[in-house]
Image (cartoon, rainbow, N blue to C red; front, side):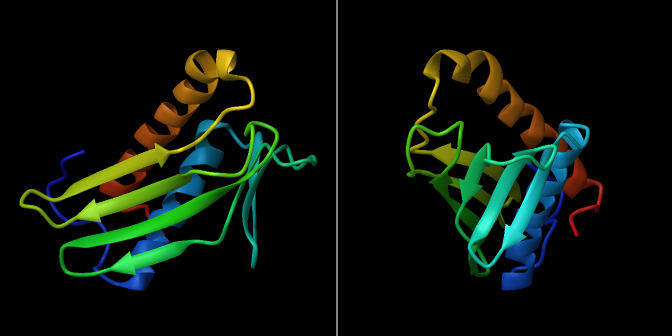
Length: 140
């Protein structure tokens, strides 16, 4: 998504802010049904707090430079994943023009028949909300 200006600073804190914004968007889109539990081991998404996790991610891996700021979470498993593997990557490039990008690479859904009609649409909705939060200055 092309943006008018960079939404986070080119720092590790800016990269972490990209990650925090994504999890806020996930909670918002699910209307609080999906809860994010953060620990030293990473992030787990739970349906109204129940176990096991819908999806589990490793800790944030951040990179920051003048051209690109990124926050990457390795997919560690969960009920919706066939196995650990793949990643969720949140990126801001400096441009011109500056851009924001959300990508999922290497994810293998447990129920691929539900991925396109359900999981993929939820991810798209979360991404739209994420972009909206970031571009309106609500990323912290």
